[in-house]
Length: 541
Ligand code: HXC
Image 1 (cartoon, rainbow, N blue to C red):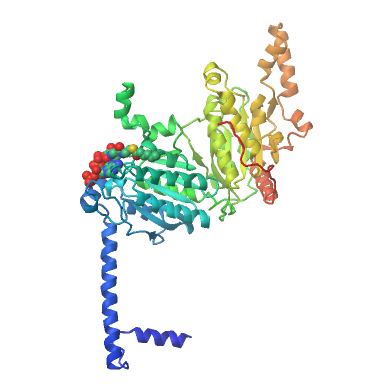
Image 2 (image 1 turned 90 degrees about the vertical axis):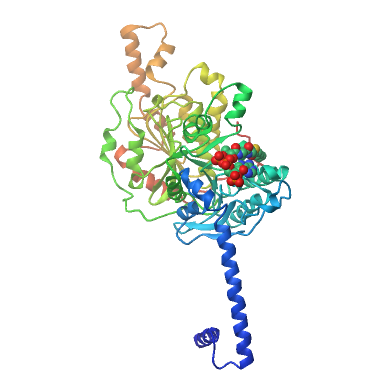
């Protein structure tokens, strides 16, 4: 075989001397034709790569933005990008559009790898009609979405677009809806990540909105349904693009986006880091990578972390930093609803989703925003078979008319629902307070928690001792009341009542938390649990 290949290679060599005159002539002709074809191919490729031209590329750079292709170069492993549909052209015949045909039609699509793992990507090219979405542009996006769904690989969209291609009218709207439909079909099947790296306005916002995570670039990206001009006309409000829908607004106030990054490069590198935590699809196992961090590492400092007074706070990040592999916690929505922490980490090199009350913010209380934030995160983990670790220190639900009138009942129910329906391994550690309904909500045993641990400092009760005594011993005051508070604390401010009922599987010494979790996750790898058949559930939206 080797000889044959060598011979064929030799045959391919120019001017193979043994060929007959005519055969040699034909061979040389074919070779010239191929060279011309390759030259034509290279010319077409170069034209497509130039997008809207050097002037517009320079304008893009002047705004501090990278081009669609430069972005893919950073996002994907070097040399891994394989482009599809490079020569696709728009089909618009109105408004002089046939005179302006740019191959690729404003979006670069294809596949590549991130740290060796397959992903499908689209990157809108603002230099071509402002990245506006045409029918063909949408078809290109749909093609890679369909492939990603078929093979089971994440979809990453780099959004930088003036919205619907105005010259195309309803064809463009149809294109959007085709993308929306695929976003929904892909939801829960393959992870979908949107990077917003320029304008994203009008109905265009709804494709990213239906993806799992949104990262935005500060100062150069925005998302809104109607822009500042329309807002002014309709409501008389004067607002800048940044205030209305910039990265800070969406990562602090609205929670539409998960992270705000400084610039394109930081956003793309963060996306690479983030993808490493995610499974390729709901059919794949969670990723595993070697970890130098001993699974049974003990952390004596955790034994003294909980302050003496129940009213004093501590930083739950410290617990996570000490329990997770190499202290690495990739936090989602760090600037929104800080009273609950959500994010990814690893134990023994395998991804875990972490939800933790944060005593440093509003004493770790559950409210509308924190319940919504954590519920969505829990559902993502469950959809993609990521085990959930829950750290509990929660004094209950936030009281007040603002919460009640804005629907804490419905929104709190989201988190309860999400935990209750989740069938992935669930390990819960109560570090301190687990009061009232919030005890039930936070992955309690009753919601099919697999392993429910408590530190000796845990207080599992209907409410804090003082509040309880004020209700059940209303008439008492002074020393009599203080005595009852001490009695209530003695009875309930510990984990043992719950443990005596089997609601807590074991009271663990804080320094052994990582070891316990690692052992628990090993045990639970083979967990099989199915919910009753249904078309889908009806989570309170
Ligand atoms: C066609 C567009 C375009 C669009 C921009 N361009 N938006 N072409 N359709 N929607 C073109 C411009 O003509 C220009 O072409 C180039 O892109 C760059 O635009 P500029 O305005 O020069 O850039 P900039 O100053 O940075 O402003 C960007 C912008 C602005 C804020 C996005 O272009 C803009 O407001 N565009 C219109 C946005 C819009 O109304 N879109 C429709 C929204 S409704 P040249 O040749 O000069 O480079 C919608 C509905 C979706 O999207 C519904 C889905 C269900």
